[in-house]
Amino acid sequence: MNLSSILADRELMDEVRSRIERGASDPMFPIFDRRSATRSLDEIHEGKKFAIGYDIEAIVRTTGRPALFVKNGTFSVPDSEVWKNRLETGRSTIESAISAVGRIELKNHSDFEWVGTGWVVKDNIVVTNRHVAQEFALKGTSGSFQFRRNYENKEIGARIDLREEYMQPEESEFKVVKILHIEDEEGPDIAFLEVEFIGLNAPAPIKLAESTYAGAYVAAIGFPAWDGKRNDPAVMRQVFNDIYDVKRLQPGQIVKVAENYITHDCSTLGGNSGSPVIDLSTGEAVGLHFAGSYLKENSAVPAAIVKNRLRKLCISARHAA
Image 1 (tube, rainbow, N blue to C red):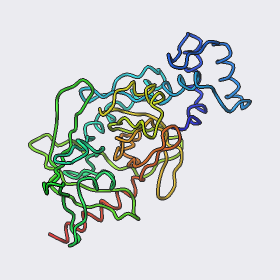
Image 2 (image 1 turned 180 degrees about the vertical axis):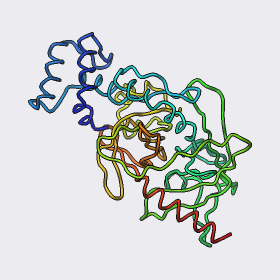
Image 3 (image 1 turned 120 degrees about the vertical axis):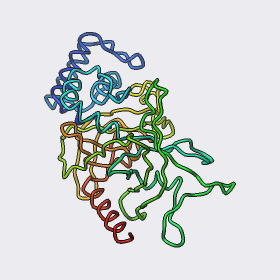
Image 4 (image 1 turned 120 degrees about the horizontal axis):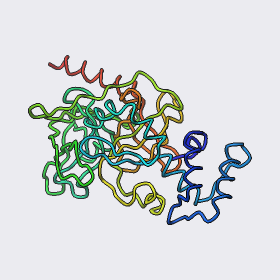
């Protein structure tokens, strides 16, 4: 998560300044001199200073890029009034997107109980990352896709749980019945799965946006997992409070838009692989999150590429029928 977008956001920085003036401070990086801290923020805004200490950074990070719990299909109210207002206007469309996002869980895998995030993109089709799907699926010698087998020659099964919310025991699991497509290594990090939705429990698919732009307010929806091998545990603790593996809404902004990828600064971790990055005003997915370097940069496959691959998949399926 690059802090530059937050530092350039006047509304958020005014809120950070106000919180510091009122005595807000992170227990791990306490602010001892509030006057000096607010002066540093002013100098950054005026272009006189380009770096901040860990004490101020902690408040900037937790205020500017929170990771909100999802409970009973909706997101918790953020501490930030700025984010509260930005999220509240699109609450219904955001909740619709939340309902279509699930944790991909595995059976008979030797290492993992779950492996990433996926979301309903069309009817009974779930999209996730190639590197997520490759944990339980592969392309066979005949060219068709199939489930992997473990060391005991048992098929590794997969399900998607559309709940897995914090302090909520309810499950909403559906079986992955077919591996529809896994992109080759040189292609975008995309895979499509067929899921068997039972009864009236199928969520509405998340629509794919035509485009996005740098600065757009977005959110990743997924299941951030502890990732202390690549990230500083103390820093993760500030945003995630040492609670992982549950569904969260992680707001932020689009940083860069390129032809083959977009970058964003939402607070994501390893379990977010396969998360949708949704536009807060429309609820449409602008990208499929596939990689991140915490505190630096996150990458996503643009929705236009996901749409293109999905269209090819559907055309191929019709021809096969």
